[in-house]
Length: 388
Ligand SMILES: *Cc1c(COP(=O)(O)O)cnc(C)c1O
Image (cartoon, rainbow, N blue to C red):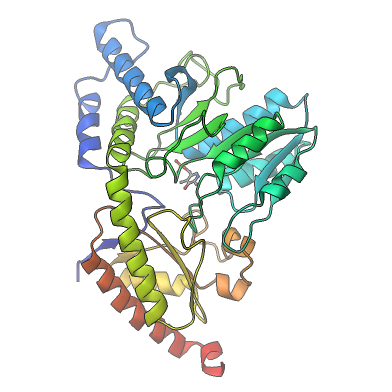
């Protein structure tokens, strides 16, 4: 059977035809270096500046506040290490949460080895941080709050506007990893008091290896990448022109028909959750039932190993994930599922299905039928299930 059903859009997405079409000229005839002074170079330069405008508009920022990077991970690294370096004299304390992406968590752990103190806020059983806990964690040495907009594993959407208000009141910078939120949820960096925001192309149907960091004007971060004078001297390296043009096209597309696409995805998501949680026993939904990304389904099946589930789904042509792509291959259960309070043995049986706009109800019916068979087969082999 050659059927393939892709349900791992939180890991990466297919480059859309419109994005590819927008990129094509810059992969062929318009190959000039944007820093060159002749017209061929100038065309690349103009393309980048137009793209910067589109990306800025989509989050209510100004063009000069957008800096293109190699992706979400670089943007997270730059934001956090940059604030640590630039504001280290003011204080050495950073606040984040236990369910951040590893690009944030591992950067914070790195800084801890270099004299910084990091508070990793707990989350409740649905994955929300507590605003009271955030407030009381702030000290006069706190220089940064870094809380993700929406979680990549369980889809929980944090109260970003409230976090921004607290950060502003207390005079602390606020960074948010908005990789999963961009193009899905409305974002306004001014209304939400966001000072730094990370975004990535490949989660919204642009290419892998391109992203951006929004840096509110007035905030001076040291460079992460040193070299030439690109990106207004803040981020060196010849620009990935085609990928940047594609990123802007993807941003434009995703914000244009956001409402309709979200409505469609929410219907598909709730249909899948409803069927799986009623037709299979001992299943739990992880994350908040309502304040979650419209395309995110995350479930735990008791008495089952997530890895076995994924392999068997793969044999049926279904691409899914057990948590984040970064942890697959390791046998540790997801740090996010542990943080929402699941015991190891339950967290091990997790499955994330992240939908895309091209998925259909027929595909989901096929997935439900296969999952019912696979879960039963795995449980029949499980000594724990036999003994229950
Ligand atoms: C994918 C992802 C990243 C990393 O982005 P890359 O462009 O792959 O480096 C960071 N944060 C979140 C929430 C993500 O989902």
